[in-house]
Length: 373
Image (cartoon, rainbow, N blue to C red; front, side):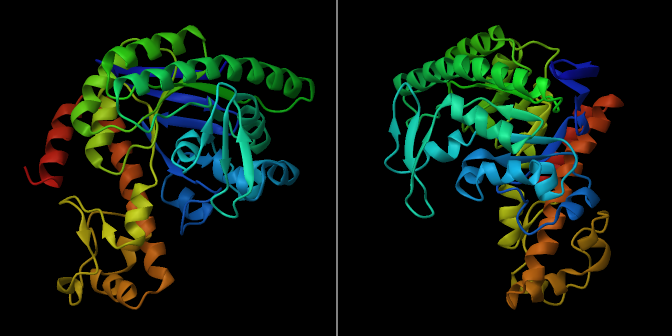
């Protein structure tokens, strides 16, 4: 069983440590989205240098390229990518169900590769096998994400997610037993809570997932900040307090991180910060700016004077503006370093504020400044 120590609580919020075979994660923590075994535009060394504690890779993308057998042959994701810290894998369900012409059955999902049109099938069993081959510390159970927001469709997707969880648990136990015989590191399974924006479904899903006694929980689905607090209160009041909870795909907006932490989530991941960075949209404490705007051409100040990332310590807004205007690759690298650093350290500061009992004061001050309220 994955070890998770809770050091302090403030309502549903908590400060803790997740202990994995590749190291500890001090929570709350933002996890770098290394979708294809890399965080876009950044090396693993740059991720370590900017303070990232963990990464999350995507099983769907890694099945397509380079293939999980090759990753296993390389010695697992740690050796293959040179990231030797804690690692998560998402099942890839979100990406698969976002594809056109997906054929869903009780057994699993059939789909075509978006790269070359090759036929694939993903089942709960094959998802577990692929994630064990990738070799991350923490896996997400294969779940069904409804495309429709209708109650009936959400309920069907939730019930299928539960049925698939049962199969993931069985397959995970088989794979864990085989790994133990070979003296290989433990790998852990998170159940995924679904139910969309409907709190009765979320409560039902949380109860079901908790009954399966997984190592932790992913909270899936797409939601807005307005509804997220109520949903997380519902879910995290039900989930056991001694197991970690990961809020899947959230963290592009700082408010998501504050709400997530306040209402009981321990880790977060999102591709948004680096995606925005590649387009010139950069975080500052006073909100996001578009560095490509003409007003930054003669601005010889740092992007953020109180940021200690490589970008802010060494370069000006004018230089970044120039790099984006001339379409230099370095623009995307420096911008990604800054945005990822900003989000990672925003969550680190949330952790520090929970430890010193200033969370609510810190939250109000940060959000008021960032969103100009």
